[in-house]
Image 1 (cartoon, one colour):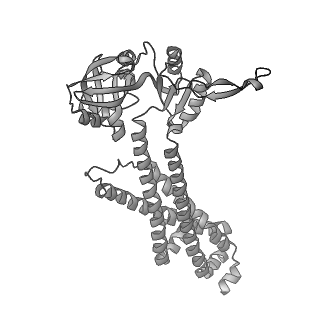
Image 2: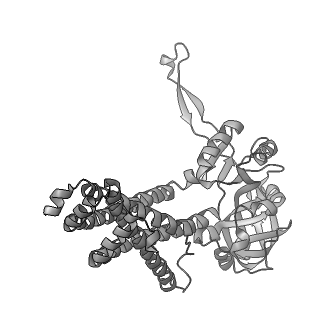
Image 3: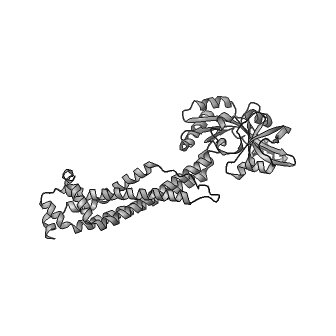
Length: 414
């Protein structure tokens, strides 16, 4: 095999084999660095994906709402002695926000459905009400939805604790906490009382658990027409909820929809600003750790190869005297750096994969369930190996240039 191998590769592998102790140390350093980077990157990606899934499975990516009612100025007359010219003091009072429908919501909905960025858009009629059973009553948020479209945005079917997601005219879905407080189960009936004395007795067809106590206490779902009747919004809706293809572009798309429709538009990024800030801070921290580990790996490779150049000065001089070109000597040490980086990355990626599996199997929640689904992206390992090899080549550049510039006569003399 060696007879077909170029000279630079033969010399590089020979130098690595002869300095096997140094090679093992640098391989261990590269492997540990890559293992740390891959392990932390995979954990962060899995944690973020799990958190995003939990956040976005319980809310729309974009929500369109009626515009707030504007403040109106009140004019308070001054005392009569100051009334010359009918002067008045304006005082602005913010009006209470009434339950209102989005103007021409059907037109806006059709416009949204024609946008390629929009996966799903659905109308919702939402307002406050009371859920009553016997002597027990609880304040709730009544959401009237079209089940076929709404449950493709908010994944209630995946979070059902009991019953089904059937929503007929006389059906209601409630959370686990509300079911416990009212003492009801699937098939029981509760009375929903809204403002204006409007009431309806509905059958509990399903109980859901969205993993949030306050949401499970207050949130209920009924058919859209049922909510419109109870809330006094005949033919109206209080919001249009949208799912988009690119969740990270939700804010820019929300701004574009706001300009086209003239209604109030909020994206999940704006309503979860603290979470978004935490993600950015976490990514910045991980990036700094990656840079620090990568720099330490590069310095380790460079230092070992510098020592190798010093130790092999005489051999390099002999090779140069025998006709080896500067480019060949340069490639010898660049190959060493690349091989050390690539092989070390393969070992480190394997260690990281094993550590991730062990972590996922051992670290559990208090009830024994998995902490979060582990997402292992094969491209992460490919990228880490390629990056480590490139880092090895770059780290070998300085010692390789030094070796290529050695004068053969000086090097042989010692």
